[in-house]
Amino acid sequence: MNKSSNLLVSKNIIYAIALLGLIFGIFTVTIDLTNFGIPLEVGKILPFLVLICNFISAVVLIVDVFKNNLSAKYLWTIGFLLTGCVAGVFYLMNRERNLAGK
Image (cartoon, rainbow, N blue to C red; front, top):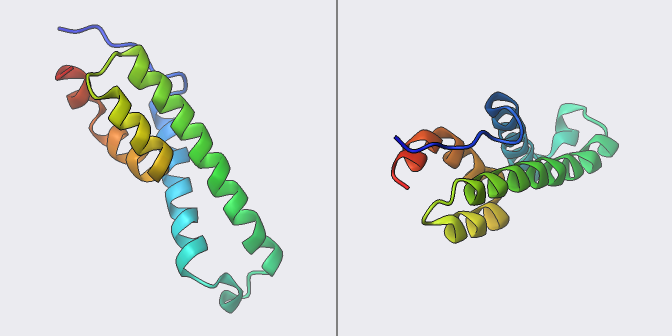
């Protein structure tokens, strides 16, 4: 059995951050929130929150991929940087399987 290192942040916390980034990103791109009575100022804050969530999840997961020395670490890094929370949620859902097959 391969010894894997823990995440920098608890899996539950980083999973919640990645999901929030994904949900806020979808809302920011697809839905006009002013139709629901949400002020325009809040709509301007959401992209900032998406960037923060993407940055946090990408940094934590890139460090995890390199600490565990996965064979596809460069592909995961590109995925985290280009798609942000989408790749982060997918990686977290399949993390144990990825670490077992390294």
